[in-house]
Amino acid sequence: MLPFSLSFPLNAPLHLEATLFCGQAFRWEILSSSSIPVYQAVIYDAIVQLKQQGQMLHISSTSEFINNQPLDKFMKNYLGLGDLINGVFPISFQQQYPDIYAGASAYFGLRLLRQSPFETLISFMCAQGIGVRLIRRQVALLSKRLGKIITFFPITNYEFPDAGALAEADLEALKACTNNNSIRAKNIRAVARAVASGALSLDDLCAPQCSLSDARETLMRYNGIGGKIADCVCLFGLGHLNAFPIDTHVRQYLDAWFGLRPSTTSLTERSYDQLAEQARAILGERYAGLAGQILFHYWRKDVRRMTAF
DNA sequence: CTCCAGGCAATTG
DNA sequence: CAATTGCATGGA
Image (spheres, rainbow, N blue to C red):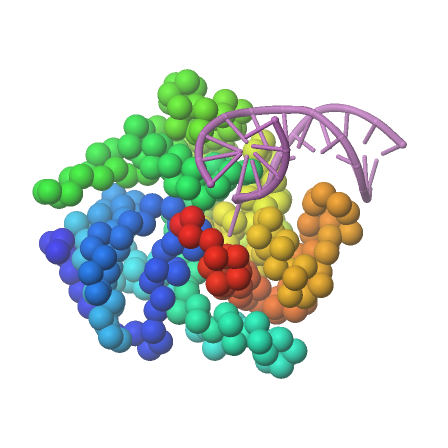
């Protein structure tokens, strides 16, 4: 138990495992695998632990404030507790695809996290053509080697490095953290330099003050960020719940469940946008990203039986 | 050895 | 313009 703790009641049951290990976040760990699991991660400069008992969520932290907000306010926002799953899937979807809706209902306790924009950006730049295992390894290495150490005896962990740290990092050191991919290391450092210099302001790209199309357009100006990665950053770090990232898994379920296929054999910028628009037509413009993330998790866990998270 | 993993960018028609 | 083809790296 960490020094600052609080509990609050939930108006709907959470699925913490699905939320923290569905691929939107890469730093959460399970501490105890007893009947009630405890989840731990470093968020900004705080070690945070979560535990759910019945309808109560117990939170403890090494800091009273996270990212300049009181712990309870920060965590409610971080965990997306304001999003009500009831309105996420349109009635038309429930009627037209009752079996899929029923299957996905096991994951209605999944929430969309509002993570650090910079950490989300760099994390998903590590996520191209690579498995989730290796993404987690890269993010862990970046933190361990380039982030500040944070301790609360006997816990030792590391903050995700800030833009300044990555901007000044030695390219070879960075490469050693990014799966030995020098192009990726170079792209990450360039983006970090843009953020550190103020040329790129991630706060300005957050919803609702910035539109999804403006945010992704800005992000996609940088090498190593295409439509999919921009959408992931928008959805998981910038609060754009209508962003709809299409990866190999989403492509698979869009095809299998809805008969949606890209107009081209390989996904181009154009066919990507077309496919995302067709998905939004089925899942609803407003919450397509959140609905899609639930379907993504359902597809991977229950249909494809993947255990990689 | 081949194929896949939460794609991107340069090149070509 | 739009679409096809290279490319990068580790693990199953």
